[in-house]
Length: 142
Ligand code: ATP
Image (cartoon, rainbow, N blue to C red; front, top):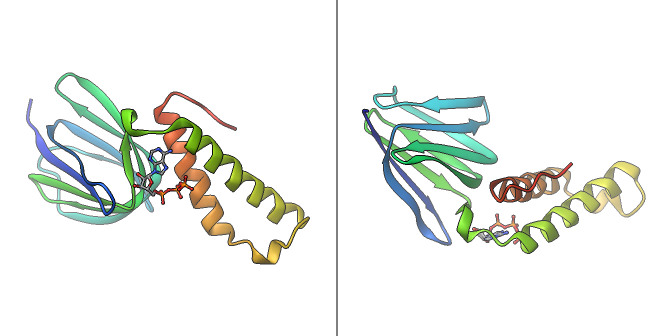
């Protein structure tokens, strides 16, 4: 089966993943994208989500906290704000982040606290990052 190189890096952890893969499924700001070998050139922004990598040996999932993806026919480069393979994910930390973000969103929606101080986009992004991390660990929330 033909392959395309995938390299995922993040500012804090450097190289997260590098491999010759068969297919990558990601969520960009424009929607879900499937990238196969010899894909057309593309530069797009990614939202926080669970990235699916199909390679020899099966499929793996990677939690991605948003970032940018550049595709050429031979190489996919993901510059992730943060990215973790399953083994690197701290479930308790993700659960705590999830609770913090959902409490902030609830306060904003009910106008119960100093909701004017809450950055709702930031809270929604934090929630999406936590959900992606928990999903990679097989934990569904909501
Ligand atoms: P927190 O509020 O717990 O810091 P966050 O979503 O704000 O979560 P990020 O800014 O996305 O965290 O990531 C900062 C760094 O911490 C990155 O290197 C990321 O890989 C790492 N990280 C964040 N949450 C986890 C987690 N639950 N398990 C492992 N690494 C994590």
